[in-house]
Image (cartoon, rainbow, N blue to C red; front, side, top):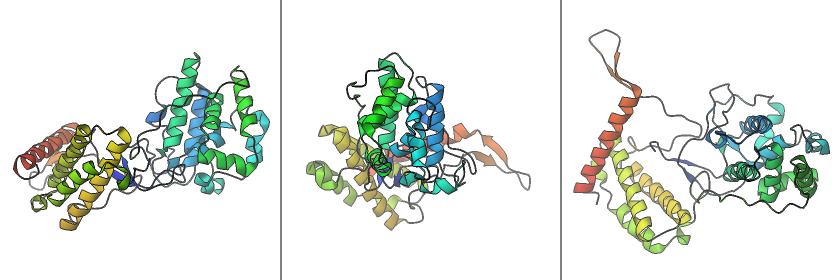
Length: 337
């Protein structure tokens, strides 16, 4: 995976500190609608659920983050037995906190040009609904999603139901009837959440990490070869080496994924702070939420003539990555051991 680590606040369903973003999930062009993103690609969804997902993403455009409350609000308004309960009408102008600005912003939401990130509980609910439906030999529908959201009982869904005085048990029975399941169907088994420190989940606190691992990385932080920070690729190479070192420490001490990625998060925050203090021109703040990386390419200019593209975008990325990798290797052999 090639990309820049971003630090952003935690998800609305799961309050916490900044987290490591491993990749972008979806983007929306200025004035456009958010794409469904990687979490909804592939087989296993019926057309009604795809429409529900699109509506939920439109609701989430105001906050830039899709939560389980957004999913439930969209699902109860889909055609089917759940809609017959009238919960969508009872909601009226009430919307979950993440969609507060949507009620007066129109169907398209604000034109802020930001992408929509999928929160950890929302991602778990979507994936679990798809897996449960597949185990029944069905395509995931809004009813599958509603049952999973009720069984998951995330803070966003619990708060939304409490606000409108709705019964989760009644909503669940209606959704089960829509897929021909018994009203006393057992609780749906949820897929595991993403590890702490990834996918918008806050990392474990430093005190909760194995101190042997953290002390090993602290010593690396103290001897960073900051004198070699002269170009942007120097910082990229140094950061790459430190990511590899953190993963090597996690492997050596046999840490689980929650500890591993939390350790990586705190280590990257620490080395960025030191590097930014030593070379603020080269090591700036993390990219703001929703900002996309610009395409890159190499150009050549002859006199006053317009510049001509020398290589294609993909080759420019490959060359840049190779330069960073070579610089990282040189640093490992000389000063960043």
